[in-house]
Image (cartoon, rainbow, N blue to C red; front, top):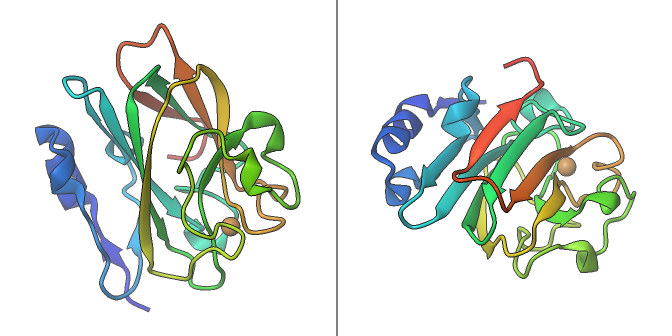
Length: 182
Ligand SMILES: [Cu+2]
């Protein structure tokens, strides 16, 4: 298994604020998440957009970026454009990513009708995607409130594979915090 360390490219993209510079496509093998949570978010206040990099299944676990059960909390201002850039870093099982109503995050089977915003899901989230595959989706965060990033593969949300997205009328920019081990 080959793992690639992507922190250099992400750090450059973060410092320049260029969304286009963040297109990381692991050709062979998957990505290991950078240690610093700040590198998981690329914000652009001018265009009111944010890219959130999510690495599914760190250490073959039920987590995104190593964080489970709401440990990772991303706040986005209302009406910003959110791009979720997903890669499955788990060489043992399929995963996916969906933004769903908070109450639905631990359902054993998460229906696609739970998706909180149009297109806020990787394709075919119930089947998920395999190791090393990168996918992204984009939506407008046009409803305030608390939502969840969850894996749609049956049972994964119930086992803790979910984190938190807050869409805020008061926030001026996007931010991230984590209660995990980072
Ligand atoms: Cu999963």
